[in-house]
Image 1 (cartoon, one colour):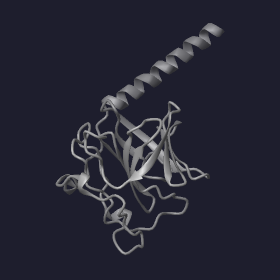
Image 2 (tube, helix red, strand yellow; image 1 turned 90 degrees about the vertical axis):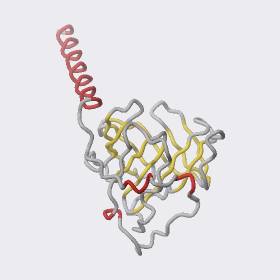
Image 3 (cartoon, helix red, strand yellow; image 1 turned 30 degrees about the vertical axis):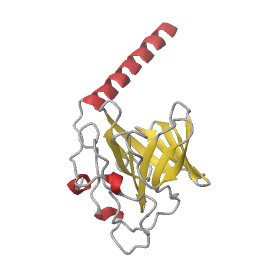
Image 4 (spheres, one colour; image 1 turned 45 degrees about the vertical axis):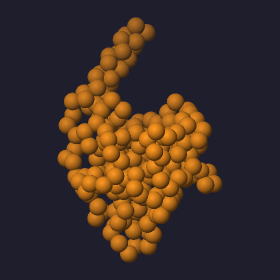
Length: 207
């Protein structure tokens, strides 16, 4: 009986792993709806302490096409995707907008967070993750990972204001939260990175 159960479990794991590998490297990516204008200038030129007023006077989150990572990564910092969006943040959404620099944990970590409505765009490590924080895979981060693999993540804010990334909506992998003026980034390996807001991307030799 134990041997039979063990064999069944091994077959199940093999099928699961095989399915994930097929999804990661064989399934076509979604149609690219990225506005090409975001790559016409270098995002290093922007002052990220000058945040848009979310007063509803401009575009809504729905008015701006979803952005994707070009190829396997970008080589030039894209201009902000949601710069013309002024839709107020949705209920339960914590304001994490800005350019963040790691000062502990993954020291030197850099990521840019844009928000309006229930939409969030995170640009970091050469990738663009554009998603809604509604907890669904349909509207989650459907993009590329570190080895140019497909992935799909459902994202939501929990009751304590933590932004939670759930890979394939199966298990939690990444957490972001505000603690005072710092944004705390925690990866699945448990390393907690304290980040502080900066206004400009550092020079490449300094980052």
